[in-house]
Length: 241
Ligand code: PQQ
Image (spheres, rainbow, N blue to C red):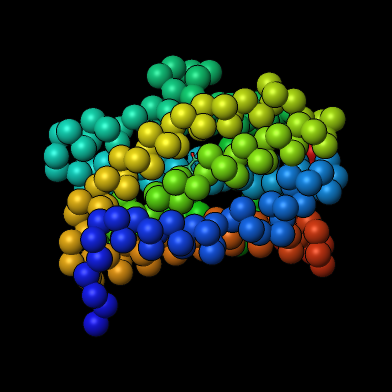
């Protein structure tokens, strides 16, 4: 039996998951931030990551639908607004589409999921399902990878701007807002998890949820590496403009 942890010990255990398994260690991410990918490979990353972006509001809507406390709903619904915007032409998904636009992809094709690698689909869809099916505590804990995202975003953006002439501060503008949104969201989720995961089995479940989410992120980069770096076997339907 696992011993009960204090809330701070639980936080330390969660941070250790990130240190060991977050996607900042993935070889594809290292190539991306070090300027060692060509334009087509970076375009493939932007295209495939659109699928993750597009499913985040669905995942948050599934979570929101399970929250019985109006105060919790008020906080969580902001995540959907961040991605969808308050109006046409606003929000994170629109900003991501400006990045895929810059590579010459057709918006309608991007939004239809053309060229998304099968493993990316499976991983991202598994995240939406996890949040719908698992306990609320596990669903909230699975968002905690956001504790680690400001670091990877800063490294990725500065590396890409330094090494690639086909991206700019404007085309990477999606990430600017994430640097304030992610810490706000992660603090909220971490407070919830530290408060509500009181029993050892609950604490182990939230650690497992964070491990699962690290796998969701890792698998997306595995798919890109396999199709576009080595051995370089794009899946049927893989697509560049
Ligand atoms: N993670 C979530 C989530 O689980 O609810 C939402 C987001 C992430 C985003 O909107 C992101 O932009 C994002 N970006 C990165 C990144 O750029 O590496 C990582 C993550 C993450 O750690 O899950 C998210």
